[in-house]
Image (tube, rainbow, N blue to C red; front, side, top):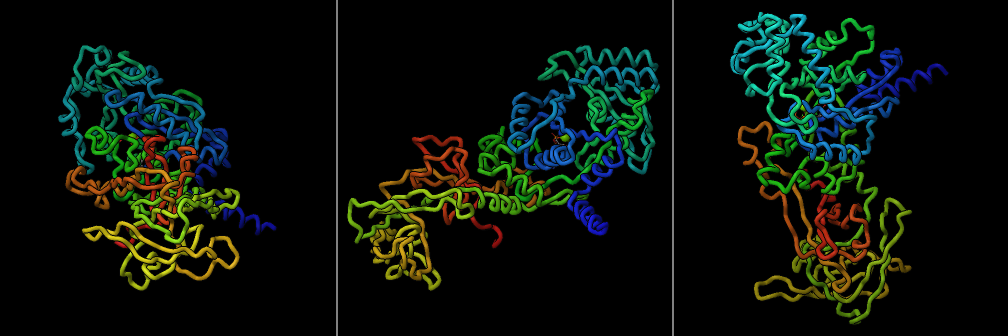
Length: 566
Ligand code: ATP
Ligand code: MG
């Protein structure tokens, strides 16, 4: 019995990622009074992308899994690039991914507390105003093996520091005139301890606090303290913050000095960032693509943003599945975009409605089918889920089929429409191709075939052996549509590691627009957020620009990985 239990525990342990194991151990040890509190801390200076989704799934997911809470904290300490547009978009995207926050906080809620803390440090002789330029300060930083040089202002009297700190916040000074630095250790092997800048002047209106503040705290002086004020227990972030962790702890220690909350303190843990091939994650670059109109907007379906993926037709489950597939480690890696697509295929295969659409149409005439006659054929909505039922698709004498499905002279293995050969029209009849009509330039204008009335799908004995099955729509019973085929945004695998400007690396063929295409009428009866499979082609969804007058569909992903071959 005991052995079995141990096995169970071992199995459970193994299925936890390394941060979940830390949380599990902390909870079992009763740390932080048995509390688990995380936060997701986006800076509202852009839209969330698939990399953020990895952090969202960690921060919210771990709280969910262990009965803790995750708060949403806007890390709004830099009014230069922040905006409420981003705040709203971030909330929408987190909800869409399937998560709910406990509370919403803002780092700007703590501006007064942070200011008071800074004043306390000044009074204790632990911070000073430096009037040097940022270049001068950078030059004095030294190198990891060489100690830095002390600023000439390092020993400024406390009263003077206090007065200048007030002045920094008065609006009288231009940006860059002076900064507040923590007085720590200019020789510390950790460069972040060499008197880090903790306050700077920004003369720009803040989207929440307006013009109240001119002196703004730096990330390292805001993040750990915000975690502490809120009661965060596990402050989870990405690996580039590993070298910041000692400073994080240093400020939290300073802040809680004299309090009796000895154990109750936030601790920082780091996991690897998500990097994806054929795209970029930098908000600066994504913003440039939007501002320079190189894409249609933040939600352009080629963008790696959550709203872009949503518009492209990804389901939240597909995104979460992908995050699960790649997992959390302590090593940075570049993940293959094809994995994201594979996750989408797997998920959409299970949930999408199968319909017929012809993207590159050519007319097929069933010459022995009576003119004016129609038949309603039964079509399975989703072979993966019998409960989804059936719908009807109208068959008639004149159909659209894909141009690529016909060849006059075909190689042996081309089991499609070939003169003299038989092929099945999906959910309908077996037809034998009898020829085609060509225009003066040789393009095929019409294809002819004859149907076998005894071969109707579903009829007993109707299923004699024919190798190919083609999709089709009835010319008089379908809808015209525009179809947008998307491909990778960049044509190189790792644009971030390329010396050329990222704009030069954009894939010129990342969007192909097809019109007119034809879709069966049943599509128009669906909700606009329905996940569709255009049979034999790929997964599609309505674009937000689609109207009943002009249908527009986006290809989410093809049925197969077309890049794998290349
Ligand atoms: P910035 O360059 O503006 O700092 P950022 O990508 O770090 O951009 P934040 O808004 O600060 O954006 O990120 C919020 C959270 O998302 C942070 O905890 C950050 O570590 C995490 N995050 C951002 N990018 C990724 C990524 N590619 N993979 C995993 N987590 C990420
Ligand atoms: Mg950041």
